[in-house]
Image (tube, rainbow, N blue to C red; front, side):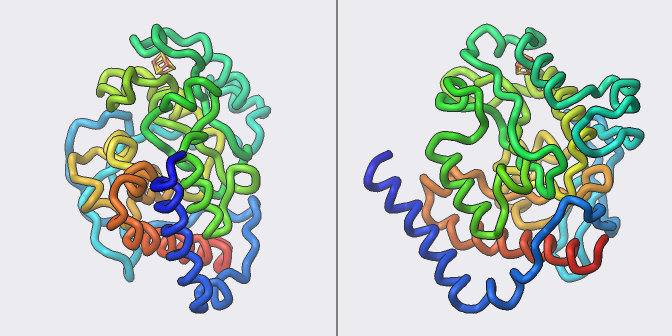
Length: 284
Ligand code: SF4
């Protein structure tokens, strides 16, 4: 990591630290989230019908006190599965299996051309019943080498961002990607690659049953939500994804290249934290 990159991360953390020191943390971060809190109800908003990349039931939401969102969701989530570690027979009957089984299927998958250039597939990692499922677009070079999601420079920043609102992959998050194999030269995954890989993410979501989905960046958000709207317009607004609140934010790598995105991203993290507080406070 270069000095400039370290400086940018430090600046982001300084911004977060300043906000926390101004009272936010002491006023609101009094609840320790547990994995036995159920999903949040959502309020219907308008949907913008477009061809989905992933199967779904279109519906967009916003909380009454949150900005308006113009988008539908585009993800297929089975509701007849049991949340937890994926060892229930109903998961097997639904063809979802366990996290380990999904990872094994991914490791041998050749459903799209990305399998030919991967070093390692990257199924994802985290807790088995996460409060938040973080979804990125796909593995980069470091992830391809290690087989783990978000471990490069952007991943380190993501971990810091999550930690600033009491989230981590070790404690209450699962981190995955829309495509499980690295696109060459870190290009955006093609729509047909996203479509080919979608069943894996669908199985993971059905198994993990996250309370909130946090989408990192334009590609992941547009893959999950049937919209061509920009991340500039979508970030910071909750969207329903088969009754799971989906929250788009800028990709951490974007923050490393554009420092002006730090403040809106920190504002988004605060919005997310407030929603998580509501989930905990009202046991919904
Ligand atoms: Fe299979 Fe997904 Fe890898 Fe394509 S990106 S080869 S669909 S696991």
